[in-house]
Amino acid sequence: MAKPIGEDAISESVASRSSSCSQWSQWQLLDSILPTGGFAHSFGLEAAVQTRLVSSPTDLEIHIIHVLDNTASLLLPFVYSSLKSPDIETWQRLDLLLDATLTNQVSSKASISQGSALFRIAASVFTETPSLKMIRDASLGSSKELRFHHAPIFGLVCGLLGMDPETSQRAYLFVTLRDVVSAATRLNLVGPMGASVMQHRIALVAETVLEKWKDREASEACQTSPLLDVVQGCHGYLFSRLFCS
Image (cartoon, rainbow, N blue to C red):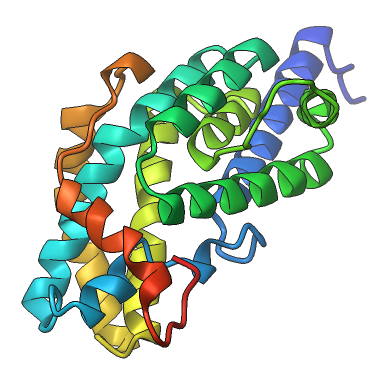
């Protein structure tokens, strides 16, 4: 005769299943199939190519590393601050602060576009976290001039999905690296195989960048490569362009 299953065993099974389901959600957040619009942006790479700042594989790799370092120094603090306190008040404050911090219209529009898409998709997909939809709905009707920038929303979503701070910040850099390498492939700067090799190689540098800039408050955000910001700001003046930024 089979022994009855105890309440403790049932609780452990439910907790384990809940944790596993949570991981599926976390992985989906990083999946390139999630339609957040990241692949419509090159993070200034297209402008860098047309201004001859990037003209070789070596230039490309250096450029991507600078993009990662600049992203980590400027945006990781907003991701961290948002996921540390994933509530509507903190997120709205960080959104307004980042809007005042970004210095060029191109990067600001790209951030708003991706952030708005991520928030809409997250609220629709991750229904096991109803607070996502509640915060989004409340913010859409807010009297504040919210912009829905990407980094604070990414942190908010990660926090509500139960991701730890280090994993969340690493994930943000991964998404950035993935999208820039994808842009390089579509700009015919590197082939698919070469892009994969390059991404794997740069990942080691990205981990060093993460260790350098992780767990900082939004008040510590700064730019390490202002030239990238200037070049990306020229994107709107390009005669022909494939990407939005």
